[in-house]
Length: 261
Image 1 (cartoon, rainbow, N blue to C red):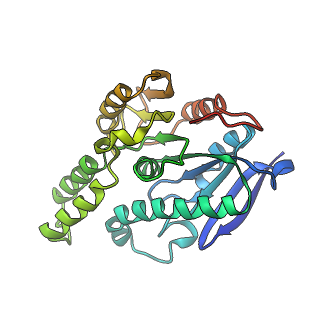
Image 2: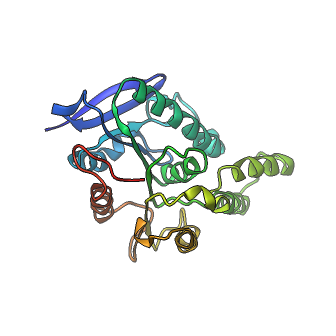
């Protein structure tokens, strides 16, 4: 039976989803980040599917989300979007070290995944941590700088952004440090799964599809990149996508072994 356990990793509220008979055992790990304005509980269905494949799945609440929302206004949270992404990347390392110290990770086998903002977080993390063995990006994009400019331009069409041009330039420079599309050498042949809806207007597919095609040039084994798009789907992960993700990661794992990397 799959169990759901609520506990903090340091200051980060998390849900652990894992076979209850193996709750204390070292297992391959998936850390799954939720999207903007979402929360850890909203990805329980995906976590369940992955736990059935033999993973321990950790669902954290991001800064200003879920149990960490703490009354922040919608506008302030929107302005904090990129700070949240970068904080996720920092906290990912903290979670990894904490779980490793507790002996809960099987042979250092860790995959990172996420939806929308969580997918952007996943791509950003790949620029920083070579210990990530595989990753899944669900309707996110690795082209962080281009997407940053898209958001700025989109907002400026309707209202004035409370940032100076100098502040916008400084933010863009900081975001570039996490831009996987500008750091393709950091892929290191790691297995990657991408899913995107072709009707997505929140993160349009053109921010992801060209990256996938370019990334294949860095892989001897093209099968290590899985790319799925759905013609009629918008900015919502379909059941088909969730099942495909679980099957894909499951092909690299069973209850005792994790073959990614």
